[in-house]
Image (tube, rainbow, N blue to C red; front, side, top):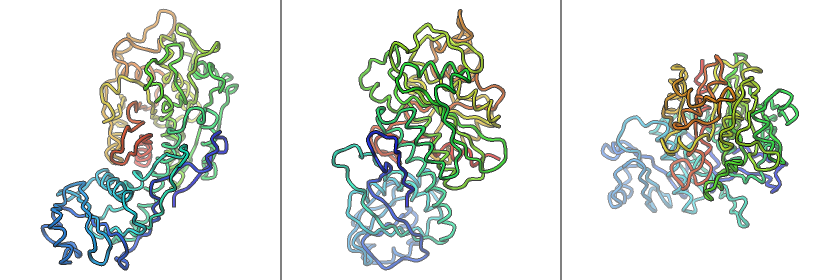
Length: 499
């Protein structure tokens, strides 16, 4: 059963956010139960040719299978009726490869979720006896089942769905399921936070959401505007001072062991007008409720680790602010002093994410002395121009960190593509009146990354730009329309893989 949570601080009064089109209730079995309404048969092309699956011996199933023209093509789904005692049988194609990657299995599970959402099944049996990684398929089903319609006047109640998963090794499958369920819960949290309107998700209500994780054993610290100013975080303070809702720095620490921590830094701009460099595209500014998706991914990752009681030491530092226009707002041409001591000339108030991240990175290094640090942010439009939503941009000069993150990307199904980062970009950020300017003149994604590099110190560090990855415009794979929660699976896998 999914862990539910509530945000008492939300003005819209939602008592329980995370929902699904279908609400699966799972149990793992080592034998097929008595036939009920729906059976799901995941089948490779080779299974059909060899007839190795025991149920393929059923003559009625074979006859309908032939009539349906089902070949086991990857991702294909055919529905049969009145076979082997079931009302319906869903044939799920797995393709012809003997080894199927985890992300492929998750996508097949997502396709299955979409199919189950269209029928009225109340009880489903998934025959996974011939598929060792069946929990990965169930994970994809879980991720795709999410929806966010609680703000609609006629929001539908999630349909309860009993799911029996038949496997060869129940104990092993249950352990995998619990770990993957924790990750799915973290993704759900990140999606909920990112989907919320800016009037309801402020720096303060985000902090309240983080504090709900304390019941899981997470230590949560919230620095208010006074504390931010007292620490000299002039960049974070400046970005947030144009709003009536002041900035916060939210720290969520899961200490599952006593090693030096891994630090995750998240950009949390709960709404971005662009400041006095105002965003003028109507569709673009509507999407700026999602400019805190990096912070949401960090908090979702901490929740995923806490739920599975992971033996890792991870601290999430999330810089939260609204970038608004007012008589108090920072201006183009201003020179800000960061907590690290570097001064920054503001050449664009719409390049605010790197400013709040600079102070957050300094805080993580100063207070926690991490052995490695990864930041995640919806940072630049130029990243979208380079990679679209197909990949997140990865910037690092640390080869070990690069390899580890690419491996985590492959394991999690959240792909990365390395983009250039070197000191040749320094000239673009040279200022006549300050140590740095906050924008370059040509390569926006790389110059933004180089700016952040100035605040990483000697700590192994990588920057992940998820602009374009935070929202899905349509249902695709494990992502329903809306917030994707991109980064939770990636960062959870990365932290768990570190020695």
